[in-house]
Every structure is written in structure tokens, then in C-alpha cells.
Image (tube, rainbow, N blue to C red; front, side, top):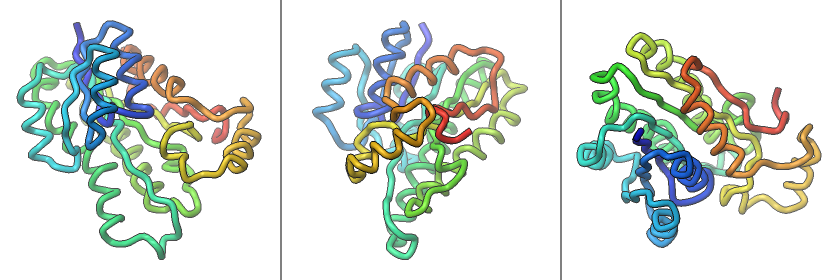
Length: 232
């Protein structure tokens, strides 16, 4: 049974990914940062193991990974957002965004990589955003972090491919998660109208794309848009 580690697994896309991979027969471990109740509910519903771990803390990531079975599939989903003008974001907020959204990917990859290299096999999946591809006004910092994740995906695919390790990325569009809480319904409706498929995305849409990439043995270095055609 393959073992998958999913970061940010207690809510939103992460929780949907836990459900999808558990349902497909994977052994699932997931990290969460704060919401203990949500994590317990996801774990109870899926049989997955929940571990409280801040991916921005390299020591915590190393310690957590050292006590688990070797990871066959890593899903780097943990992320935070910031809405506002570039002049309004503080240095602390900017640093934290990069620490979680980019540093978290770096720490988790480094933690699971030795076992993957030893087996000469593995799969790393990163969750970016269409804003990392085209940028978004009032989300400059978030866009910058997700652009970095996309570039890192392409670089790692080339670096790790000869070792049998595939690296891919999903690039979600407007997905109805907690990150949309600050967005008004009128705006969400307008975004749905701008989407060729006529709706905003769901967490299940992204989870199914992650599961597909986990099992697509001849695909690496790719950015899979999950945006309903919003960005083509």
C-alpha cells in the first residue's frame, strides 16, 4: 500500500485530497497547523493519521517525517493567502507567506527525499494557483509565492527525474474554500460567469486532479490547470 503525506489536510483542498487518496486505497498521513477539531473529524472519517505540524518549521517537519513510514507520494497543499494592496502588507505577513507557501514545500521535499532517492521512486505534487501563472491585483504576495512553487516544480522535475521521482503541480482557479470567505457572493458569481465552464471549482475537482497525477507514471514537470478554463 502506497503511503501519501498531505500537508494542510484538515480543511478545504487538503481534506478533499485526504478523502480521495484514502478512498483510492492509499495509506494517508496529513499535517495540519491549528484546527484540532477539524483534523480529528477528517481522520475519523477516513482512517488517515493526523499530525499537528507547522510546515514553515523545518525541525518540526523533519521530526514528524522521521517517525512515519517512508512517503511514496507527497502532496504540498499547505498554504495561506493575503488580500490587499502591496503597500498594505507588512514585512511579517510577507515573510510568513513565503515561509509557509514556499518554505513549507522546501522543508517537506527535503524531509521525504532521502527515502525516495533510496528507492529510486516517488511522486511530489505541489498545489499552486492560477494567480501564480498570471498574477492577481491585490494578491501580489500570494501570486509571487505560487509563481515560485510553479518554478520549483519545473526545476525539481528535471533534477529528480533521473532518480525516478516525478514532480508535478496543480494550478487551481477559483475554488470554493475558506480562502473565499473574504470574497463577496456577487464577486464569486461574476467569477463563475467569466469561467468558460460556467461555475467556480470545488475542492473535489482539485483532489481528483491530484489523484490523477499521483497515478500518471509518465507525466512530470507539468502544471495542470484546474480552473474551468478561466486561464488558458
